[in-house]
Amino acid sequence: MKKILIASLMLLCLLLYGVWAGGQEEKKATPGMDKIVYLAVEYNDHPEVLPAWAAEFKRITGVDVVLKTVSSKNASDLMMAQFMAGELPDVVKYGADNLNNIARQGFIIPLDKFIENSPKMKKLKEMYPSSFKAHSVNGVVYGIPAMVGAQRGLWVRTDLLKKLGLPMPKTLDEFVSTLKAMRDNLKGPDGKPMYPLISKTYHDGYLPAVIGNYFDVSILPIVKRPNDKKYREGWDSPQFKDYARFIKMLYDEKLMDPDHALPQKASKTRSKFYAGKGAFLIMWVYRYQEMVSELRKNFPNAEIALVPPIENPKTGNVMGLSVVPGYRPFCITSKAKDPQFVWDKFIETLYFNPDGAMLLYRGIPNVSYKIVNGMFVDNFKESGIHMGVRAPMDPSIKFPYKLPPLAEKGQQIEQQFSSWFSKYDDRVVFEQPTKAVPEYDAIRKDMKDKKNQLFWKYVLGEFTLDEMLKKFEDYKKEVNFDSILEQINQD
Image 1 (tube, rainbow, N blue to C red):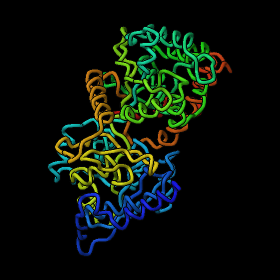
Image 2 (cartoon, one colour):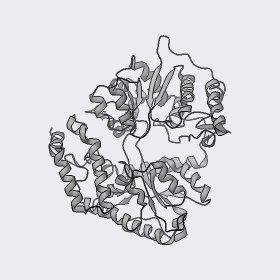
Image 3 (cartoon, one colour):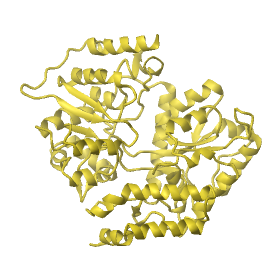
Image 4 (cartoon, one colour):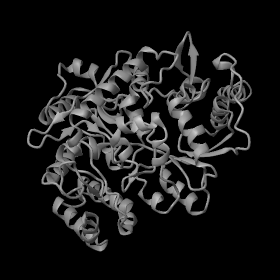
């Protein structure tokens, strides 16, 4: 029955896509212009919504768009394989943050001249310089960020803190004490002691960053803090051994989900959190509405909050903030017959047209959301697609509809997170190299995978910390890492 309902809903979007906005007429495309081919990651698990997205885009612009998607798993690799085979769309929302490789190979084009000729985009670049810099190569912008940062924070069930009479932890020692109190006094759904902390591991922005940042440690191969004079290897920190021992202690003392050692999906960690298998969760900041709603299905009085940044008194680094300055940018490819047309009709529409911004930031009307009494309402129960709740990058965009209370509170939490980030900006963001060093491009992904494998084998007790570090140094020699780092640091 649900599949029939979804199919009917898709058909309705295709045939009556003007109805939701009061019967607006479809706009006419510019004469002589071709359709736009768009490649993205979104909606990859729901292919039936692609026609609805295209129909809504055409209603807004009068332009036909062919929306293609790839799986979110290894999205950048899948896109690269298509590019190498000559299958380039007109515009792509790239599946990774670093554009060095595809820019150097000529798959995407510089966007500076378009930005310079667009007063609104130029203003956004001035407002969010680090987000645009994140998608630049040698100072040239190749991608437009869809949002300011890929924010992940440390969430805690405050109802459980209250139940145990515990305050919000303010120091690392208090955080550990809180985890132990939860392990000793709370039960999971199976009646066994709860594993207090749940997180995805194999990702730059989850456990290695939200906790690793406290110790000035990064899983990224080569990084530089704003105060660093040169690039360095991500584990090249005086506190690395402290970090490694800290994570192993959490694992050995059953303070963290034992599946941390596996490459879990974020959806799986959320499901565990909703089921009451943990009280702390490292997750996207904008997920508040979804997480509270899902939690309350099992725990009606559940409430959550972000743990404020826990500062390292020795270095000023913090735990609880993970911010990638830019995330999954929009790029115009070298195949686009008329890049200016793509910029005007696609990029400018999604960023500065209110209806286009709703499509980008709220989703598809009557699929991702409905409008009820002048308010956005999540349509997940009918379609399986959640409504987006992030605010547009352009603060001048004012939607004609209100958010429901939980979504509104979620945006307030996101704004609070952003204010924390601005305070600790120079102690949170790691800059990655953009210099063209092909040897580095060849090992970048492999080195992150190697670090993950070695680290978790150490945590699981397969070898000692010193043995792990020796294996890592041996690996660095195999790939000639010191020479690569020297090339990157050359003026």
